[in-house]
Length: 261
Image (tube, rainbow, N blue to C red; front, side, top):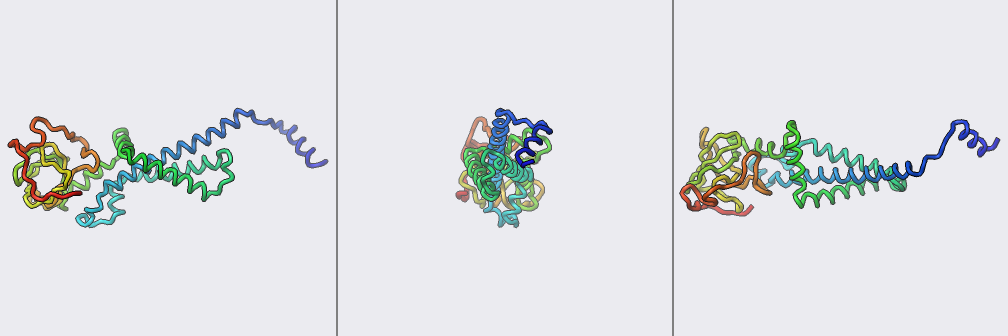
């Protein structure tokens, strides 16, 4: 018995039937969709990482005494790194099993998937998608500790020279702020550097670098805006009522040292 006859006998004995064309098309389409979906989700995760890198504020490392990597890891929820790796693996799997995917080596598929995720993720980040995705995650899952919460923890260490909160009153040389835990602080700022985007007005959210004098007084050496994007912090709106842009007495405070971020 020849080889061809053996194959025919096996087909008959095992009742092998050809797959319908629609199943083949559906399978190929599913792997295409899986690859595209994995690229998109991986891109979103990468855009969140870029958002965290932007928020890390490397110019403050000298004050914090940490490396760039430590600053990023302090802000970045680990889940986004896991998402990037998982979706990258899924995109490689989907590409390999898509039509003609077998023709590409693992190295080439890895390169295509990685570059695609990075390029799309960068574009998504530039239009604010990274920040949106991170905040959506934070508002959807109570157990998720987002960038904003981690940022509050970093900037709520007055004994280490870091304080943040919302301005509640402004005098020529002293601010009063309400920190994110609801505690009121007096902030002498006569000799402070004030970043260019900061407005010393009520309800403005700021970050302070300086020294704690006592349990209610913190001398500021630098005053910076809370956010590098929209300036909003969790639980504190930016809306300013009557007298917007004015201090308690209705006049702009005299800024001591103005600078640019």
